[in-house]
Amino acid sequence: TAPIAEGEVIVRVPIGSILEHGDRHPCLVVEALRTELERGECSTYWPYLKSMRDVVVDIPNAWSAEDLALLDGLDGDWLVHTERYRECPAMGTAPITDPLAMRALMLYVSRAGPLGMQPVFDIFNHGHNSTRHHVDNGAHVFFAVRSHSVGE
Image 1 (tube, rainbow, N blue to C red):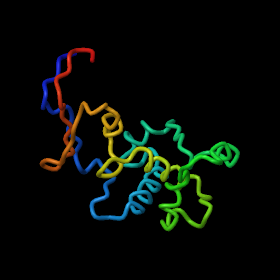
Image 2 (cartoon, rainbow, N blue to C red):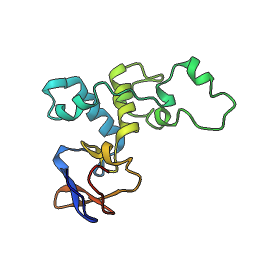
Image 3 (cartoon, one colour):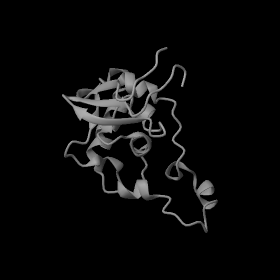
Image 4 (spheres, rainbow, N blue to C red):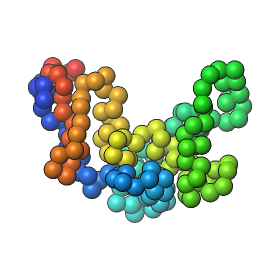
């Protein structure tokens, strides 16, 4: 509804609203996300989790064996995401049989930002370099790298 100036702060996401990495191993964030998904509406993160309730994660790790077979002969490490987290205690034994753990992992690998799972980041991380972000005074701050006209 109004133009946005270059350098203008668009949003500040409080660090406390982020299921964050900090110096923790990402496996711990996946485990925490699984726990929060299990809590559902009782989770502190429910408003954020609710926004992802119907998100379909369409990366090869979430495909059936039949669908994965379509990639045979193509160069690529199609299961890198699940293999990377195979040692996470929340994932159990191979193959991952806990649907909630798999959901947490797929959401994490497809939606996490540089600080972890956080509201709003998913909206800005596909912005064709129209925003930048940094941590400032206890918040993850997003700002415009160029001016934007109304409706752009």
